[in-house]
Amino acid sequence: MKDFTTRWPIGAWEKGLMTAVLELGALFGALICGILADRFSRRNSIFVACVVFCIGSGLQCGARSLSDLVLGRAIGGLGVGALSMLSPLYMAEISPPEVRGSLMALEQFAIVLGVVLGFWTGFLTRSIEGSASWRIPLAIQLGPGILLSIGCLFLPPSPRLLVLHGRHEEGLQSLARLRLRTPAEAETDPLLKVELLEMRVETALIQQTIGIDKHSVRSEATAWARLFDRKYIDRTLIGILMMFFQQWSGINALLYYGPTLVKSIGLRGDTVTLMVSGGIGIIQFIAVLPAIIYIDRLGRKPLLRGGSAIMASSHVITALLVSQFEDDWGAHSTAAWLAVASLYTFTAAYGISYGPIGWVLPSEVFPLSVRSKGVSLSTASVWVNNFLIGLVTPALMEISASFVLLLISSKT
Image (cartoon, rainbow, N blue to C red; front, side):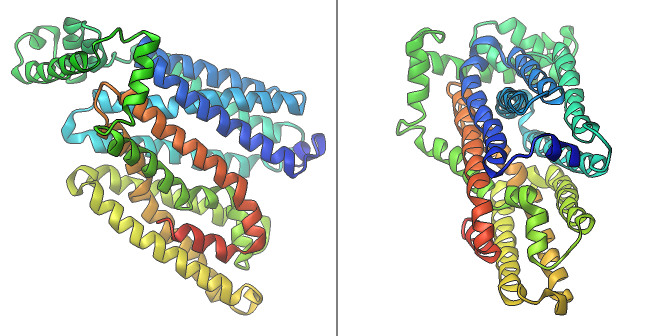
């Protein structure tokens, strides 16, 4: 995008700043919504997050200075972080238990679809003359944000949250709507009655345990502190560490620095490197599809174990090839393409394991009393580690690409 670099000849510090402000904004957005999601409902919080995201996207698209762009990314980051926390939370609460994993894996499907479309949009517009080469990709972000904002008007409220607030009849009607029952059937369907009873029992236990106003400052502090009680610390660690290992598996390092890594294994030319990097997103997109189908049948642990083994092996193979042939790739084109195949294998394994399950587990392990806070903290872990990866990967890549691969293989 020649116009962008000509208009704003930024250096390494400015590039790092533009990356950091989005991720730090997302971190704060995820944490703030841990409070707002209980107070203002999941649906209303999602709507507000969409509006914030659209404001940030609009500022980026219409940026007249680098400071406008940075501000837009910071505001957009708040919306992204909030939505990354609210989406799995809401989906977990409205999904039937027997297909919850599959439905929540759709979030990863949507994330990867966005990555693929974003990558290829940038690829196709990179040669357009003028600022349209970078304004068009930024403007396209507004489309999904506006659609989701409108869609929020039709989203049913979370029945669990309604029951928690004592609105049992509304909770039953929302549950009936989600289970495709008529209002009349809601009064007679025994399965709905049982599901509502389970929610009421869970709510009664919450009220007995906390015993204070759920909107007070004290209750908010208590809810956050309970995440680290002996009763919940294991669940909290599962949420935080699941996201830690998801990010440090290396997928974002590949997405962010794919062209650099591909060049390090001997492929040359912008078109070739970008297409190979774009292939990473496409393979991940395809690999999520089996996860959607089988995650509830096979379970979470088998997919994580199998994915870890394949991902670590792929990283080790690529690292060995890079360390062995990086000084003379021209004479070893087979080894170069084998390294690319290994990267693709890693991506497929990630797409069927850590990618979707990273969003499923945190939303499942926390009880309703601390679920919004637990998911908020787990999602914050995503953005903290994403920030750290963006911070250290460029420097480590300059030292040794094989070292980067071995480092992330040790974390899978």
